[in-house]
Amino acid sequence: MTPNPAVHASYAGDYRSPVRDSFSRWKAGAGPAVLPVRQPETNDVPKVALQGISLSYKTNDGTRLLALDNINLKVNPGEFLCIVGPSGCGKSTLLHLIAGLHPATSGKVLVDDKPVDGPGTDRILIFQELGLFPWLTVGENVEFGMKMKGMSRAERREKTEYYLRLVHLAQFKDSYTHQLSGGMRQRVALARALASEPDVLLMDEPFAALDAQTRDLLHDELERIWAETGRTIIFVTHNVREAVRLGDRVALFTFRPGRIKREFLIDLPRPRHLEDVTVAKSAREILDDLREEINKSLEAEYEQKEVRP
Amino acid sequence: MKRAAKHAIFYSVLIATWVVLAKLKIWPPYVFPAPQGVLDSLKAGFADHSFWIAISVSMRRMAIGYSLSVVLGMVLGLGVASNKFLEETMGGLLVSLQSLPSICWLPLAVLWFGLTEKAILFVVVMGSLLSVTIAMEAGRQQMPKIYGMAGRNLGARGFRLFWYVLLPASLPYIVSGLKQGWAFAWRSLISGEMIFVSLGLGQLLMMGRDLNDMSQVIAVMILIVAIGYIVDGLVFKTIERRLQHKWGLSPAT
Image (cartoon, rainbow over all chains, first blue to last red; front, side, top):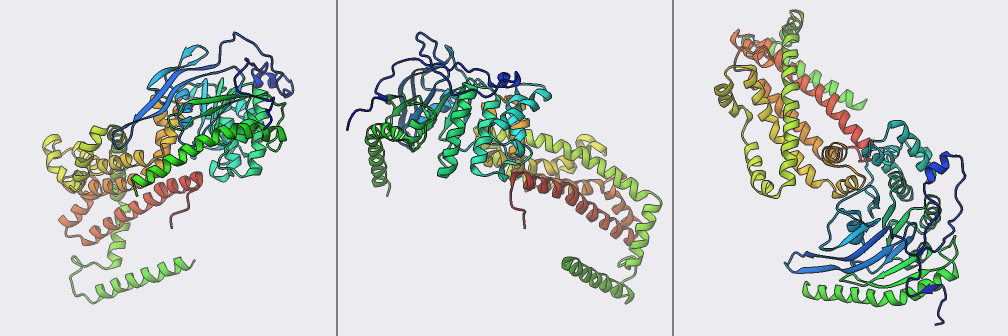
């Protein structure tokens, strides 16, 4: 296979989005931003830094299982980082650690150089199961984080409207979440997370359960919203193509214990598309590396089956 | 409409049987009154306000006693559900205590509080507290963990987390327990009120017995059933319907 110049095996530079607060820009009457112009900036403080993160836990039979092993990772402000790995590699757990919902066994999570010690609204996690509140309407779900922050009702209303419009759900404000389709629920979760105006958006396989068309659409929307809001995104997926289509950088995790095997810089022009040849080509290279890990995870599964028939 | 017709047929047959049995005069009227006598008692009771007073006194006790046991039960249930030690120890005690008929608490209540309002309230609270506690504990455990995590993730802490997330999230799981708690409280109240001059519906029942007025006894019994039915229909059915609408649960058939 010929080497693909768009994929670098190591991470080369720092990137920062010039776009910051989309809501105030919208209020000032400016139109939506174009896709961000990225300017490499060195010696910048990373938005999120993981320093020697390890996590182990006791399994039911009493042995300790190492789920994450010495993870070191830096994410730059405004960067879109994708994490791929076989299922069971601890990539979802890592997001929970960054969100502060779970303590690490050792190591530190730094956000803006400050250590994380619990949940904070500067980092909002979109769960795989979404965790939308079924007793609240779509609008109330989006408002929830702002209400917890003690924002005034009028301000909440205004922002809810803005974020619902951003995800094209303005007319569903008063619906309950069970009345929406899977893709629409995804967008509610995205609006709810964005409405808390986090610096860092953590997404845990958010599109895994969607049909291909809906997923394509949401990829476009997520890319657009990322460009408009300038958030830092850490996106976990097991789909390499999705990672290449969305990410500025892709970190590949090993199977149990989860380690960073390699990082790939995805230097392809945006907007991208899942069917782009360049995307497919880049994905192919990562996939070759990933396959090895998937085989390991399958082997582990077979072994387990032999032990417990 | 068909249902209404069935009901009409059933109740006409029931009342007709009652009329015929009373007309046969097998038993004296103070043992087996005619429907007309019961109806007269109902009318008289409402006319001289004694029924209205009894209803308002009893409902006031229910409101206080039931609210108390809901608040206490929720706190207790949450405490038990969120502490492994309490869950393993107190959880079993709560279930076994629930087999104790609430009227058993009355002698204790009378010794503690005397023949007072407090004694009746105590029995009402003891009647429904355990149902609410057990329901809350079970609800807290059945409730998907994701809601609590999502709430914390969005910045809810402490009391706000409980009030805005954990409580509404567990409501579908505890509403049947709340309903059961109400029914138990209602029973406990009526039994408690029979013990002394307490002005409630229970005392009206005993008064009917003291005066050998079987018509009044049956009239008050009908009243007790009717109030139970109305509260169930107005309060709990409404809550259940709202929950089904919001959560998209299929209506219970």
